Amino acid sequence: MPVLYMNEFALIATYFKTLSERVLGARCDLGIGDDAALVTVPLGKQLAITADTLVSGVHFPADTVPFDIGYKALAVNLSDLAAMGARPAWFTLCLTLPQFSDPWLQGFCAGLETLMREIPVTLIGGDTTRGPLAITIQAMGLVDSGCALRRDGAKPGDDIFVSGCVGDAGVGLRLVTQNIAADKSILNTAQLRLNRPLPRNALGAALGAVASSCIDVSDGLLADLGHILNASGTGADIDVSAVPISPALLDPALVAPLNLVDGSPQGARRFALSAGDDYELCFTAHPDKRVQIMALAQQAGVSVTRFGTVTAQPGIFDLANGGVMLTPAGYSHF
Image (cartoon, rainbow, N blue to C red; front, top):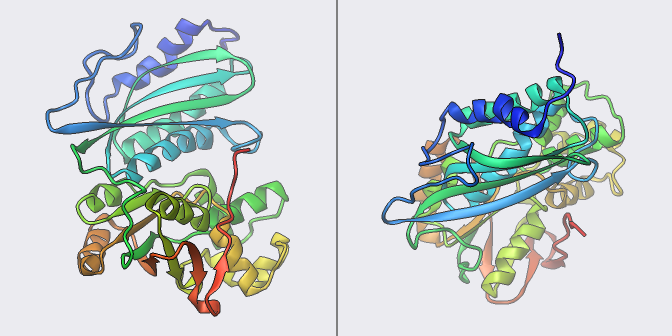
């Protein structure tokens, strides 16, 4: 007989306490079941803490499957830890549900657990309530004291790198919001990258000893690079043509149905650099670290590409287009 109603405490015990007992990451001293969790931070470590809220219809389409909602809600937080060079340890979950649904909760928890197995982290608490669908996750990670990556460390002369490629999630969102059939493998890949981004935690942890600054690419590569430059009081000369972009944006036949404002190759590339939701890492490092960075990226199983140089002059300038100054456009929450 299906369950039609469940109170808050039974819901937590049935879905989330059970999930938390499958310890996949760092152990805690006291987890779900009391007024607060208790954790011990090892000697010589700092606790990196981040939080993100995902709201239905704002951060994901209302008809997104619950598996993908659970997976992505955790992924975006782990990506923030990756950008700080922190190894994930624990997270809390606050879930607002319009109504009880066993199939929805089963799918949501399956999405969480899938990513928890890929990147070990332990659920240690949270809250549930009734209302419009929204998910808030607070993630905590450990980093050696004084060794966290920050946005404000870029120096003139540093190289600028990005991991993976950008633009896939932007293409995936276009497919969903404009109801475009994803009938080719590279389009299906783009849609998967939108719904199930894989945070670069192994790379982030490895970069702690070599990078001078770092940020995860959530709002768009240009916008997020702009955050590093603003925090560091610097600028950048970049080669836009060197940035790896979604394969879907390199094929004019696939670009046309996306209805971009400018469907030219240059317009498609600008779209990739500003669409956001990529959850790659953009980072800077001294030029003498190039060989080491490539070796660390290979060990982490992630490609990285150098596409620019930090400068003393404020602004972002595209050397592939005559040094024109670029506007760091990207996603804005307000």
